[in-house]
Image (cartoon, rainbow, N blue to C red):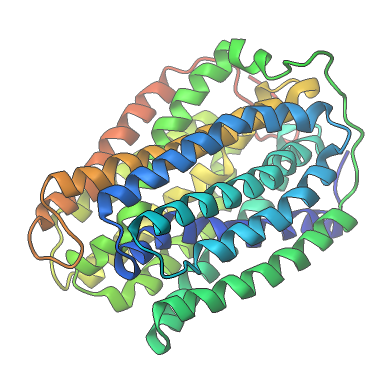
Length: 418
């Protein structure tokens, strides 16, 4: 099956608001709750970790349900839209409770938003894998979807900082969350009604996610994805703290994020072309090494180093294109047709675990080592956790990818080849 341009754009539409939700949850929410509530940095990290772990456990079940459930891909997505909308609104509109009440509110809002996000994302990605029959088609779909995602990320990076310049943070995030809900429902209608429907091959049995667990190629790829995802999530979690504390330029956080994700948009087609030439695995490995080389520089920066950090954002953003466009192609190449949703359910679990590990480890670690938001003490520690720890994790991921010998698809128009 081959999608025409109209079908491709319709499929990709919902990806824009989905990533508009993802960026505020793991980039903006930690600082928002640290600044606007009585929650400590360590407690925020623990709550984010706990909510992610609880949420991630359900993802393999959602994946299996997506493969065999009567709702189908579109039905599950339709169920997830109102849940994500309600959770997102609640997260950025906390009531003036005491610490325990705010902690409970944040946990419930996170779980609701995460569950809605999973109900949409897992069948959505499995649906995309089914809309093409070869690696070239899957990469075209993935690249278009991720390009829409990066536009959504840039909107999420630009709009809240601009609103905060004119409005109190609580009011600004309240307006942003309301606009997000409207966009989410509009994009969902386009995707659900205008994308071609694919007949699913339903697996037999209740435990259809077990084939992925037993698949050695998937297990090795999962370790790589988890290490690489955690390496990317740590600086995302600490980004606002780093820009405010180390660079002393909080007003430039939005432009830095926009530069980073815009470079990612530009980089995606370049990585796809490289994948055609050298193979998907080697292209992704090149992206990892580029990110390590660029990001280690951030540890050496200090107050006012705007231009060097902008260059780092551009270079690491280019490398981001490889992380977005290439891993799903490797996954689609090893996932059997009768368990696509199950494989992508476990894949989504790994993405959430990487975010959970990033928040649950980095935020309490900073507090233990003496850093607190807004203080001038502990900035070297902040820079080390922000820049060096991700480089170590990404290097481990690169070494594991180098040793990964499962058949990996090329991006040639001839289809999937070893």
